[in-house]
Amino acid sequence: MSTPKIVLFYVFVPLPDPEAIRLWQLAVCESLGLRGRIIVSRHGINSTVGGDISAVKRYVRTTRAYPGFADADIKWSEGTGEDFPRLSVRVRPEIVTFGVPDEIDVDENGVIGTGTRLTPEQVHELVDQRGDDVVFFDGRNEIEAEVGHFAGAVTTKAQTTRDFVPLIESGAFDHLKNRPVVTYCTGGVRCEVLSTLMKHRGFTEVYQLDGGIVRYGEQYGDDGLWKGSLYVFDNRMSTEFSDHAEVLGRCVECGAPTSNVANHPDRDGRELAVICAACLD
Image 1 (cartoon, rainbow, N blue to C red):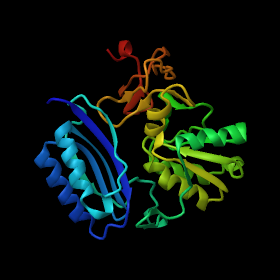
Image 2: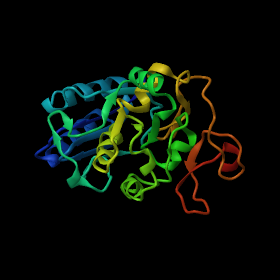
Image 3: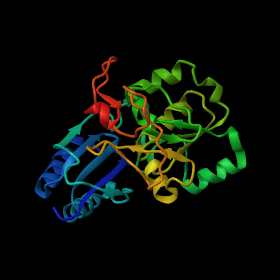
Image 4: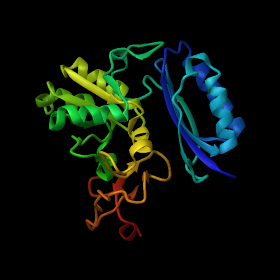
């Protein structure tokens, strides 16, 4: 493999026949030797695949040839060539499993009723204008936030995306309902839904970081409001935006600073843990 690359993208658009899209995406990826994970639903597509750069480029061109996916915001990153163990292309009720598929409505412009999209620059402008009143709300799972998050962000104990609706409905975050809340996640897909669900539940000023942490990191690296490492859903487990990223994680076994995430069944039965290389060995 010459130059391995990974692409991450999602598109919310009505898909009348998700199974047909699944079969097409499966055939394209198999023909190009790509591996990764693609989820298709009646709401759209969520794809993370990797392989040789020439094959990945052909995949992107072919996928964009479908009219509904023509404007997909493709996020590129460096791969290793061994980033995904296999190819998985599945149809599910939601492309991000919050457990409320019937609450989300999608048209040709995307999810209806989302939070206001903010570019990384606009996030900085909002913070400059509103100061400490701005709340960054992490739309990722607990393990992801342990190794990196926005400065001062509200993080949760969510173990899966399904946990967010019960957490929000518990009243634990009701004190934020009248403050400017900026939701964020890895590439933006979870916040398309999360920001909508929060608005449905009485949060009055909800934003979403357009393009997620990935787009923010591309622009500001570790010299802005982001701190630490970015958890990723491939064999790399985490990545950094610069050579001076802070180390926020703490080893579950010895407490040493680390950004390493690995499969490590612990006393709580979790499959993934923040664990240093020495303890993992």
